[in-house]
Amino acid sequence: MSTNVLICDDSNLARKQVFRSLPESLSTNVQLAKDGAEALEILRSQKIDILFLDLTMPIIDGLGVLQALQDEGITLPVFVISADVQPEMQTKVMDLGAKAFLRKPVQLDILNEHLTTHGFL
Amino acid sequence: MNAFDLTEDQQDCLQELINVAMGQASDQLARYLDTFVYLKVPSIEQVKSEHFLDTLSQDLKATAVVSQGFFGYEGIRGEALLIYQPQDSNRLADLLGYEADELTFDEQIIDLSSILTTTFLNVFASQIDNQMSYSAPRLLSTSLGAVSQHLQQQSFNWDLALKVRISYQVTDYSFNCDMVLLIPEEAIINIKTVIDRILEEF
Amino acid sequence: MLDALSIDISNRLNTGILILDNNLNIIMWNRFLEVHANKKDKKIIGESIFTVFPELPKKWFERKVSSVIQLKTQSFCSWEQRHHLFELSHSRPITTDSNFMAQNCTFLPIEVEGEVERICVLIEDVTDVCHYQTQLNKALQELALSNRIDGLTQAFNRKHWEECLASEFSRACRHSYNLALVMLDLDKFKVLNDTFGHQGGDKALIDTAKVINDLLRMGDVFGRYGGEEFAVILPNTDLKGAEEVAERIRQTVAENTIEYQGQRINVTVSIGVAVINKQDLRYEDLISHADTALYQAKAKGRNRVCSAKEVIAA
Image (cartoon, rainbow over all chains, first blue to last red; front, side, top):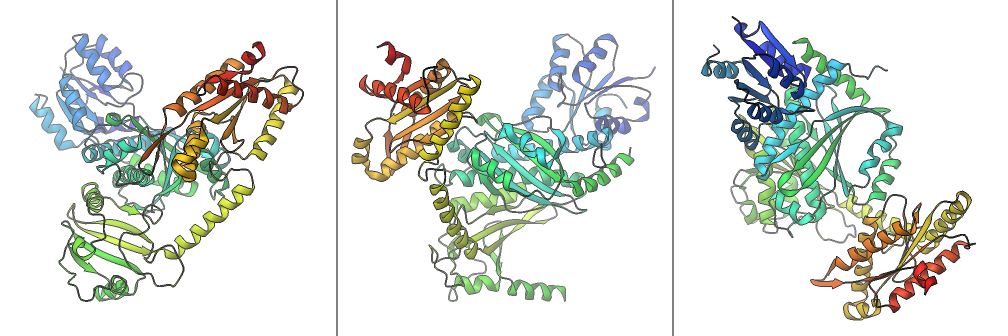
């Protein structure tokens, strides 16, 4: 049974970067969303096992997605991968239930560390 | 359509590079200014020199414009314009960590502009394995008419430029400024080369 | 060999090079500075920069350098903001406003393994630039004065402003557009001049003109009509719109405090508003209506707006 992964980022390049950094075990069932609205649609209708989430996106941004997940009681591990790394932002994100905060561009070893900590490796 | 147009992939790549640079620069700034800096998703467009003034016309109500040149390796260079509508000059001095009377308004604006421009461009340059040098920042004007007059008088030695608009907002101080990066056409070609190199990795 | 060459060049440069450690002690300086600073009998290397150059604004300088260290980025200070930082004599006997060299200074971080270990200050002699730029500014000011701009307040001068009104007026007549005129006069200006002197009066005019100008749109035409009288042409504006603008001006001016030599000056304006109507044949008629309304405003107690329609009704 493979893990369902969702990568949400408005940048094509960033989505590719995250995808390329995923270990093999997580690369088989990957879906992509280009903004928070698309991501939420997918999250509401399917069972996703892990979400990689950007913060600065149009329509619904990262914080919006996290809030919606909390409001709607949808629980799943969320790894935020963002360019905006200010401490205040990190606090906001973790308070909204994210499991990890990674800075862009995503680094393989750091990603793997977090994945191991949360039982994906 | 011309040779300087960026493909969707190239545009996306440039946008992402800028995004990451913005993120890190604003983090550095936030720590330095001891406040929270809010950024907006950047917009990138091509501008013909004869339309340049039009695209800035909404900004000509601005209180001040500071210009600073930047130049790196591989022919990547341009001019950064920082456009302000500051609400209160006393608070600006506060923001920068000076006493209110230590700096004139002009100096505050120029100081802040230099910090905003160079922190962002330094990070951007390091993303593309480059390094930037800068010319001294210049205050173009603090009056509406004079800015537009100054710009009209420039004999633009470029026909086309890339305008990247980044919005900085410092929330504690309800203060806004826009950074417009003008990159002339020869430099656009050089940037495309760099972008293509990055895209090839994927 | 390269080292010796660098040192040789750095000593021949017409730019000052000063290297400081993170505690602002001088590590090295070049010949340019030796010559211009003229501190032969003092110990320089290893001393705090403030001991060697006591004229430096200490807090400002420390803050400037800390930005370079923390953000690892260059910083600048140009002669236009501060004429000079270091009191150095300049090489040419040009008559400038200062005995000291005008300077452009650049602060550069010198990194060792990712941390800033030293700061390099480059000091450029721009005395010539300063001199010629100042001359140029004066010449431009004189030119502007004789052309369209009132030199003091930067509003249009009366001549040009009236020409604008003439052309707006005929346009409005031709196309049946709206056109409004707002005329304003500073209240009790003579008293202000007597109290604060002519320079205080001038400052009041400059500041007031500025705050009014900031309220206006791109198409509005702002001019200085007389000594303490201003006027604004509002194209495509009806009476209600003009009254709103006038009231906003009145309020902004009343709330604006003018700083002059440590004192606070407050001024108010009386304002007359008029809009073009079918009986007006020439632009002077419009001015006449607005002027009459302005005098009504004065008569009714000042610091208020009166419209031409009120005058006609009365």
